Image 1: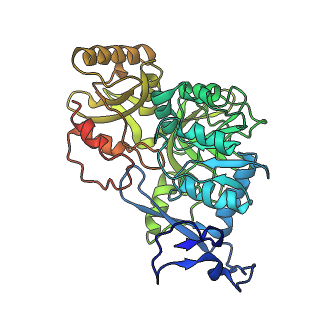
Image 2: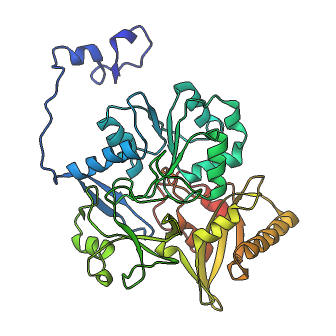
Length: 433
């Protein structure tokens, strides 16, 4: 325990042999610390990510390339200024926390808020209170957090002074247009650009995102690749897709890309540079489509495509339809094996109101099934809709869909759940049949 000299009069739980006075520790020490010089491609860190498979991958990033990506994206995407007060709400242990809590802001000498906790404690106004108190200018959070805050207090931002904000950002997964508009109007006051950022643990920094003030935004789209990023959409044979959806790839190397998987170089090549593409492209593992303006729309993971009676349906498409219903705050869709259809659609839904029971539950289930049929088509109707107070999420805000798949199949959950922010929700969803 370090206690500052100016606070020596404050009560402290002092333990001799363990604790030391700060002024004694720094006495006689030089003000400048010579860094250890390393090669540009020397390993900087290894960060384990499970992805959708559950088998951890040790993503190894390089020193110079990763730092260059973090610095450039701070300047370009967040339009970083010396007098900014930057706040990325991510856990520092995940890639978002690495790039936009530890490395990016600190490399630029930025002033930032670092947060440990949940956005709803002690109440759902916690984020907005902190923005007001610290005069935050740039706020970067996850769509899942935004949707949770809409459910628990959609009118709360208006109770705080958020006039210091000039830029908002989202990260972790595609943001549905309804949440985007609430974020823009209620939090940003209709004046703050929103940078919807697509990137991965493996890419190290933003790949597709709007440059605020330079690239017009569309609710739900991450817009255009950053300078130097050659992104494209291809089919299973690696041929470019001009119209419709396909596999998102990056066609040229970039500085902040993963260098290898620690201890498993063969898996690195098979996962990201598959034989189908003769190693020409980096395969992101996400599906996407491009509109008439060339804007990218991320549809979800490649393995989050359902085959229902011969029809291929993206889970993100069904989730967006559900969240567009005024009653729904959040939704996650998975598939389960079905002898007749191949796969059946199972939806886990968080309502803006209380979790329904009895006849009310039956009524809302029927309404939501009809709603999805009207939005997409009858083939997209969920076979099963389950309600919960929340969804299982990591501390970085990602929904753990592989756990939801196990629940949908009625399987016992044997996967590691230590990264979950709210493990108790699993039992509630298992019992919500």
